[in-house]
Image 1 (cartoon, rainbow, N blue to C red):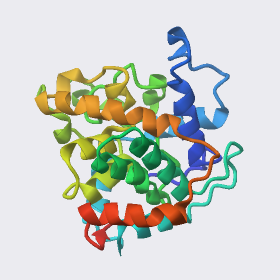
Image 2: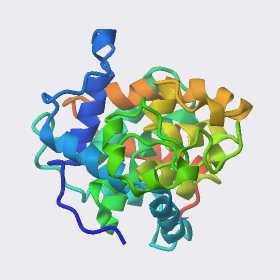
Image 3: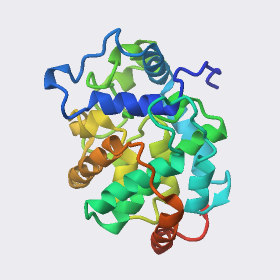
Image 4: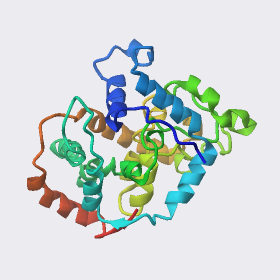
Length: 283
């Protein structure tokens, strides 16, 4: 069991905002990986907790706990409304609801003329954050994701915080490939646990492979933004990578205080949801 830990961030949006700033396309390239004392203390504490407790054993235990998908049954729009109960009153930058954030992303993708399944992916990609409503701590819901069971890449943000991770003491886990065969493919690799992995388990049978990759890897910045872990990837991953990279700007840069008219848009999205999903899903 992982001990209860004080909440490091004021809200989940703090992590989203930090990542958005970190990869700001207008930011000088030589400042991309500058993590200094200017970083908000809550963000640093978040990464310390995340890197300390995301072990292989922890990930496997969460996959067992949630993999049966027996928490509840609900449709996609019901899940959006459920996520909406995760009230964020502390974000000073916006007062949009969770549903409005999701619709904003989807609408930006639709305006860009992307395929309908990608629009739907934008709508649902953060639904795994309902893990917070199931009692999971922030560090087990959001955060940059990375492979566990093998050596951590130095390209992961704040790699020094892995010093306190118990996997540091397992020799096998500190080798390049760890428990995996070279080029095994990321679908066979255990990633740190969070909303990405959870949602990919929920929707994996209903969306194209490209959409599942966008969902599962959209927080895996060490891979899709930093070029790490090529030794574990295969030809399928090479095909998926451009799609993940295509999706990422919509995830990072569509936050705005311009409110979408959710009630007016709901019929469109309910019809889109019905093309891909049954009335109820197991969560």
